[in-house]
Amino acid sequence: MATSTLPVVSAPRSGASAACCAPLTRRPLSAEAATDLACTLKAVADPARLRLLSLVAAHEGGEACVCDLVEPLGLSQPTVSHHLKVLVEAGLLTRDKRGVWAYFAVVPEALNALAAVLAVPVAASAP
Image 1 (tube, one colour):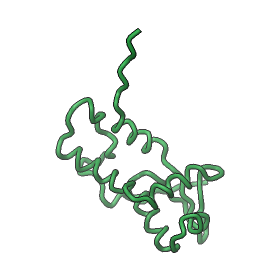
Image 2 (cartoon, rainbow, N blue to C red):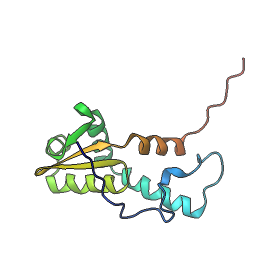
Image 3 (cartoon, rainbow, N blue to C red):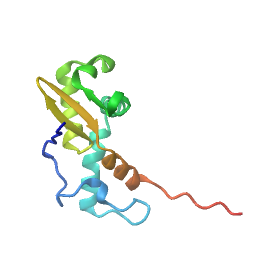
């Protein structure tokens, strides 16, 4: 099964993903890195999009058809499709068109990279 990804519309200026940044606690972000990271965070800063990420990731086989996502969200199909498009453009989901339906899967590397940027090192406990 072939998967395709849509081009990123609001791509970071450097052409790299926002998650390329060092963790926020290691060194201050440059203005460009902050702008890039903000684009990715904006994509997940919506409750419906967070639920979509969760629904897709938890779906059997790790992918979900748009038709399976409308009812759980309680939103119209065009609204769900819009939110999915934003997540695909941010590089957090992939889209695979099969006939008239589109199937979506989480990009684990993108979520892991985003988590790594936001990670705060835990201080080692004193013995």
